[in-house]
Image (tube, rainbow, N blue to C red; front, side):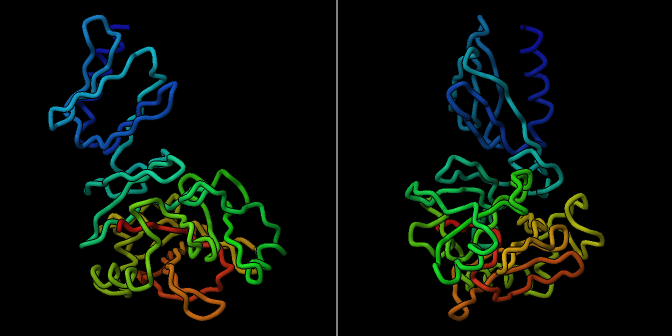
Length: 292
């Protein structure tokens, strides 16, 4: 046991500069910290308590008997464990949604964005977001205007790292899919982002993850220098069919374009554009929340 603690301490000291998050999985839940605030990890003399010492001098104590494991997430690693998603040269923050899901965040200009796609299946008030709609029910959401979510191809394996697809009615619901302190970005706030990155014609390349295990080649001009870490999770079209995983990713705004349409932004594998486009509100696209 003492050897384990020694090697954990040695390993922690070695990787601290390259990590952004530490997860302590406990019998009573998960405690997450941004690792850039951690100075060291130490154990008391009897090895019954693990202490996490933060850079401001704060000490967090965790009983060894409560700890199941300790995970260290690398700077380029998604919070769900997927690799080569984020820019390892940037500093990411952290936020937690109303369901307890933890995400990396990134400051771009004067805005702070989620750097990962939303994956909650409940609204801010705890009420469930409708799911498991058939093709016909998904199409009819244009009439019922019911908010809904789905996994790509209705398969939960896509939740990591892509998150969930939502129709626009979920995004516009007054119960909010984004947690308190965050909101669903407007079309104008998306434009603020792309303008800061040099305009729509080049912003997409700066927003795309560079990992070719996700993007179909050539993933043109992808640098992820903004840290947005956009992934090509595809979409669910208005008739209910799924398509385009590996080719593009689409993210809703909260702004309508017309009765049946709303603005979104999409990133594509074969150009550097951040495309402003108004798909049908029944489309399933991804969501990035923006700090208030």
